[in-house]
Image (cartoon, rainbow, N blue to C red; front, side, top):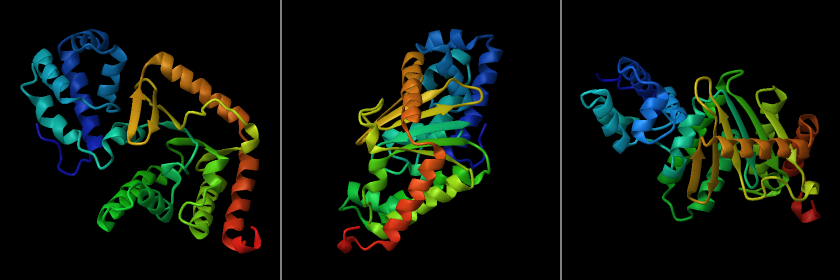
Length: 281
């Protein structure tokens, strides 16, 4: 069967996940039993069925064979795996799109879901200083499209812990930073997101190695994602996810309260806009 042409990749994966669940149940297999034949865990099969993980080409072929689906998964997974995002981040971005809770720590940047277009442009230009303008425009547009997750008044829950370093690094200049911080403050003030600042005075903390992204889902196990330059790892390994959840809880405990964080962010936004750096601001 053919899916509607206007389905985006994440929506198409949800449709394919539903078909996988129906095919598995027709074959009278549990998630664990199917996972054993695929050499993955039962929880991984659950994530495939929920659309939070990709069905890779070799796995699609095995599913068609095991479940006698006549090539359905091979035909449809190629389209479902297309992404507007960098390859190392694509699966995490698509999981994020169906998460009910997202908890993030960022050490160097304002989180992508909270960025303004000008701030995102400055970030991408720093990463790719020789890229054509059309490439930068597309990257910015894709990032802003991700931010539409926050258009819903309450879902998903987004809780962001942002290192003070990310707020003080003048990415794009003072005017861009002023606008970026004002945007974060506005989201927090209308209670759309929860934001905490991890101050320099904390010293050593539980995630000195870098950023951390935790995602919860309605019908699938939680995932964690860690990222470095051009690299990322998405995992559902229970021990790893539990360790990352503890790290995040420790970060929240060390951070300023949401109220004090909002006051600091708003004060810094005003400073960026109004203070003259030549006067020692």
